[in-house]
Length: 211
Ligand code: DX5
Ligand code: ZN
Image 1: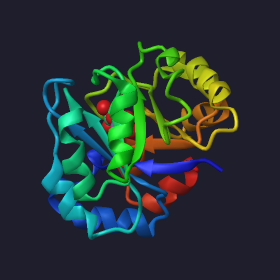
Image 2 (image 1 turned 45 degrees about the horizontal axis):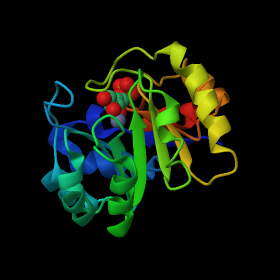
Image 3 (image 1 turned 120 degrees about the vertical axis):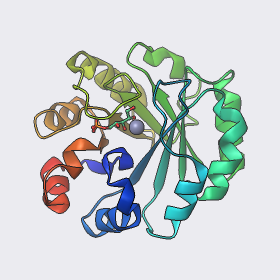
């Protein structure tokens, strides 16, 4: 069964703690934190203090999706804030292997995110080391965008490359009740969803439907 990682980007930031608690009681598998710096992507969200403050509100694993330039220098901060997974963009780091080793040395699981135009081949050398691959099915930067169906073959290719490795193949962007089945049958182990989880009154029902 596919895992669901709600993105807090679509949460009510005025009541973030209740939102985090609500996700846990509604059956989320992991929480997805979209950190944006206004440089790697045009948008700006939240950073270390917010994640650190929310760490105590949930026992769920935290995946911190770093949409920032030069994430290398921030890894220690997010590890200390309580990240279980730190996901860096392949396009943002100077040396992917070294960055993954740096994340592991902090005692954190390492994820690598790929923008839509980035070829899965960039992972070839490091696939055996990574704990999570995040396939972007929208251009990173904003929630509520349309799922890029043309990414489905890329998900399939990554599933093939993954073979029997233990890494989580996660898909992020535009996941909703219509697109979730396609992403899952293409090979996703985990679906990240913001809008589709928080729209309407019943988060539990939304999560269950997607799963
Ligand atoms: C986009 C983020 C995604 C996105 C998910 O830059 O990485 O996590 O916000 O939001 P929805 O589900 O609304 O596409
Ligand atoms: Zn994300």
